[in-house]
Length: 149
Image 1 (cartoon, helix red, strand yellow):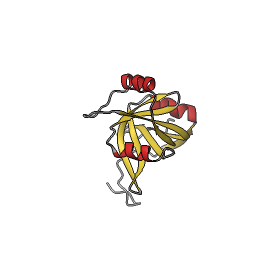
Image 2 (cartoon, helix red, strand yellow):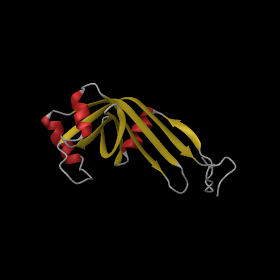
Image 3 (tube, helix red, strand yellow):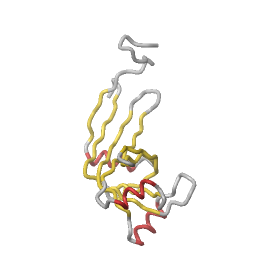
């Protein structure tokens, strides 16, 4: 059905958007297994789905040494990326979304690499031989609430 504003009306109720603080946003992020890393590729935004692990507020992802993300991070030690994850119900449209923006760096310490390799199993085929740490500068998040709040 098309509503009077020209948009599809699927019967879903309007959602109240509530900002959440940094601590809650990082806690929610730590509770899901995957998200999307946003970086610049050839001067354009690129988005890649990856799984992650949150360690002391730092977002850890594993990737391939030959990936565009790895190339971007290695080419600029102060590259800024964004990381987004969410949990929004497909039926009720209630849930949350978190965005972390900060510096991305390859992890070079062998002990940290070994630890993250044990804790973060890749969910895609292929060798994931590089660990990238995203150090959050900006952490934002919202909850989408229904009428009952």
